[in-house]
Amino acid sequence: MKILAVDDDLMILELLEVAMASIGEHEVETVSSGEKAMELIRKQGSCYDCFLLDIQMPEIDGIEVCKVIRATPGCEHTPVIMVTAMSQATYMERAYAAGATDYLTKPFDFTELNARLNALTQAVQPDDPT
Image (cartoon, rainbow, N blue to C red; front, side):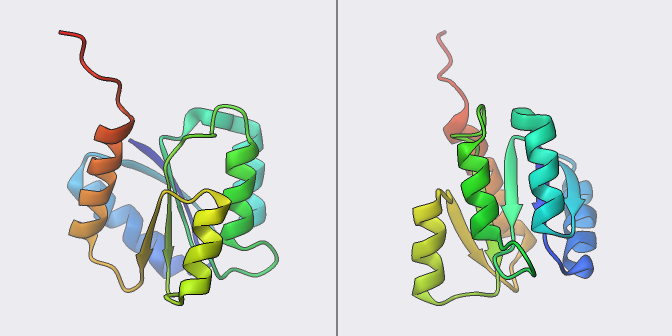
C-alpha cells in the first residue's frame, strides 16, 4: 500500500517511515505540512492508496487537507486515517464530516495502525470473482 503521511512533527514522520518499513507491507511518503500535501495530491491525484493526516498543523490543518482529498478526482474513496493527539469529540466529528475513514489518537501503537491499514486494504479491494 502506498501511503502519504502528513504531520508537522518530523519525529512522528520518521517513526512512521521506520515502523512501516519494518512491517514491509507499506511504502510511506511523508510531508511536513498541509500545503505540501495538497501540492502532491493535486499533482499526483489518486496514486496513493491511503492518507495519514495529523489534524493540528500550522496554516492548513489535516481536516482541510481531507476535504481537498475528497474533492480530488480519483481520491473520493481513498482511505484517510486521521492520526492526531486531538481526542475531543468535536475534532472527530469535524474529521468524519470532512470525509475521514478512521481516527487514531496519538500516541498510537504501530501494530494497531498496521491492523487498521490491513482492514482498509481488504475493505477497498474488489471481491474475488472466483
